[in-house]
Length: 97
Ligand SMILES: [Zn+2]
Image (cartoon, rainbow, N blue to C red):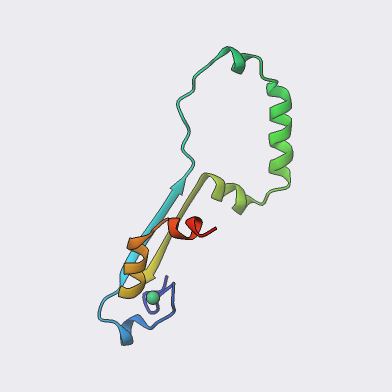
């Protein structure tokens, strides 16, 4: 995001477009409230904890951070802004698979 070119198509925002749009994206892990059931009490927490530590040891700090919280900003030209608003979560591409 430099305010000079569209982050999606690369068009120059200062020359080829009178307006630019800023899209702020924030994604974070949402956890449901803790509910303790009999199944929860029977879980092997030591094994789960060891498995978690094993996964952390082979994952980069950036990857771990992205699994919890991501914030990004993008400059978009009017055309890309319109495309983004029509399908911000790219649901159409999932429907085509
Ligand atoms: Zn664009």
